[in-house]
Length: 196
Image 1 (cartoon, one colour):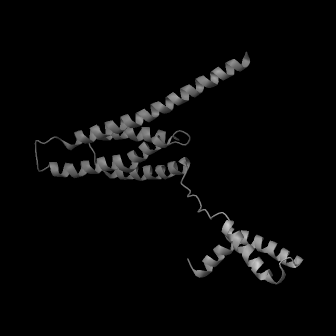
Image 2 (cartoon, helix red, strand yellow):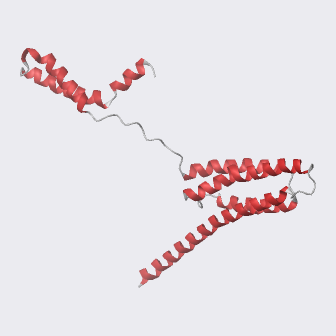
Image 3 (spheres, helix red, strand yellow):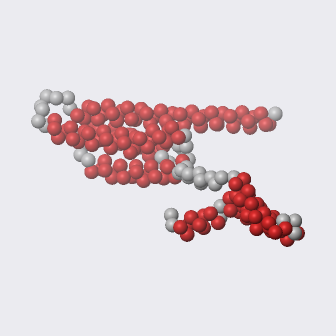
């Protein structure tokens, strides 16, 4: 921040504006003759007093993205994840589990469904961390498993990971479904009671 920026910042500050208002009051006192020959000290003193009593400057509150903006960014990341997964060679059993998880996440990312921060966090972690890491680990492990015949196939771990992620996202869908059912019951009760 340069000297001119700091100077401009002080000119627009609360301290300067309050001090200037008090200094103008000192000019009014000086014009009435009440300050006598000490009028410069009265004006300067009132300016300083005003600058001292002015409330301190508050920094602007940081602006964080709201749920809709977070969902938009997450949808973009989901599109990138899909492109990555389309290039990876996976066994058909794994691909089926991944397709089921993909369909569920896609439905949850539709506008107007997920607004709870915890649900949004789980979906973001699934899209940005869990699925890419699980698939990448599978690809790396599969390469090494060629050298150790008879070891547990790496796709079993990937299938278990995808099943756990599917269960986690299914819980979000169930919570949304329950919330909508409660909302519908409440509205039904309201409409019925209104008629009586």
